[in-house]
Length: 283
Image 1 (tube, rainbow, N blue to C red):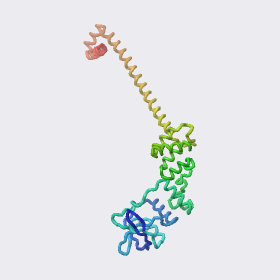
Image 2 (spheres, one colour):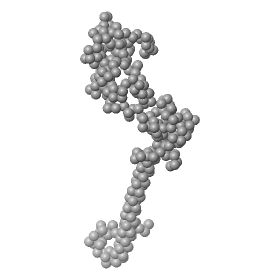
Image 3 (cartoon, rainbow, N blue to C red):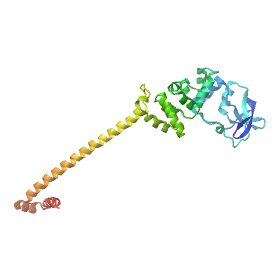
Image 4 (cartoon, helix red, strand yellow):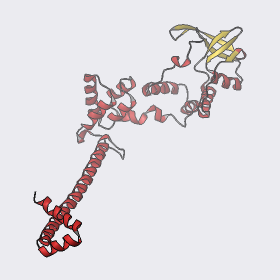
């Protein structure tokens, strides 16, 4: 007997000829190849969920596995009898694994299977990156324990790897005291780390180099703004100087009565403009 959706379900080996698919969802060819490789490499790990329908059994969850097992020539399939038909949703019984849980599962699998077999079952080239071997070597033992225990997630552990082991232990104590294991909190503590306690970058971009990049980008924008300000200030000063020269010229021009009379007779509009210029500067 097994428990799913809060109700007991019964395990049963059922002849594959008595299984009837219900609804088959569309999946990518890559996903199909991954499931096919898994079944051929390690066999059926997760039983099909079925519901009795007369002499047959309707497949509620596992139609894709059923199709692959059928092609493989399997005669009997391990199944779980669902207690409900319409209300059942297979995804309710599936929980996403965290990085630490997946890592423990893969390590457990390596006790019985080789790495190539597991990789083929998962449709991957290799699983070394999923074991986080390189990351674990950089972490202080107490941090490794916290990560493997699910206290902190993978991204948080990666943030702590940017500082030396002793600093990692200090940060973990602070996180414990605040009961805050978020990536944001970890990153903030890493950025506050003194230079002497930072880990060697080895060509990788660290949080403080990213912070420096943001700082340099901001300084660049400020410098560009200052240059624009200087440019427009220069234009305004030149405009003011030219305007002052124009006013002096117009005033001396209109001081001559013959010139003023000539403009009044021939160019009255221009004379009006000149007078407006002078009047506006004398207010």
